[in-house]
Image 1 (tube, rainbow, N blue to C red):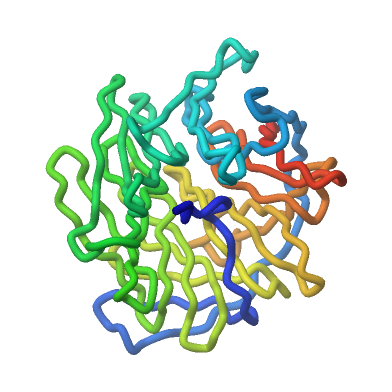
Image 2: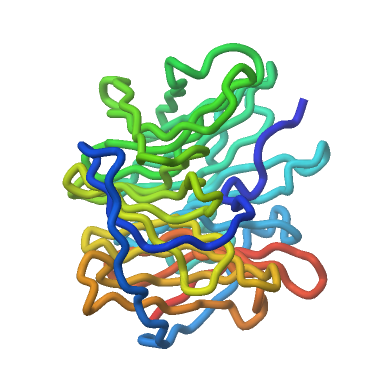
Length: 322
């Protein structure tokens, strides 16, 4: 059985909704705010970075402040399994290091912190997807207590320097995806529950404990969310049909991807999301993948990573530097 989600960050088709703020302690309350402007505030230099073990399919999913990157190669087909890796400067092939959970069918490395702990998820031989962490070459698996049985899923998608990780879980008996955070030193799980939302995916957590992700709202819209100080704020890229938050910094600079009305995918950078008069969206496309670009992670230096699909249908990882 090969059920591991290649492109774990695939969006849910929906109509764009308003930018709303919802206190976590008052799940029925929401207030609309003005849309933020779109502006090319920064320019970036793009570089394609692929593990040559499979140059036809690479996704870069995480970057830390040391400019170490994580991702995976292989499209998940029987002869092309997902294989996780970490790569560090100067990003030559010799600098790629495999990250594979023992006896896993597929492995994706999704995130890493500044203490070089790598996190991700893997598919085992029984068809169960489990989260994992790699701490100095010691690997530990994680399963949310509510995701039990064959066909269940627990994916870790982000981790901070306090060793708190976030992700989502589901199973064959559950109808939706549910977000969680886990303290990896204790294994204690905690649900992340934005009000009036289903299919919730937590994708990033910064050093202050602010969490980003995306969810399907009661209106049918797929929107990004930011959880800070027990309050949830929802966002939609202007005129997009869905918006997914995928990475966050200590200053709440957020990256992700949105679908435009023609169905094309673009990355974005969102700055100052909680300062309405200063908030700016910037659309981002790798020049080799305009309309097929997803930005997955950002560090404090404004370095970005992600992936795009070229005109031949090959998927490549990229790094963008300001």
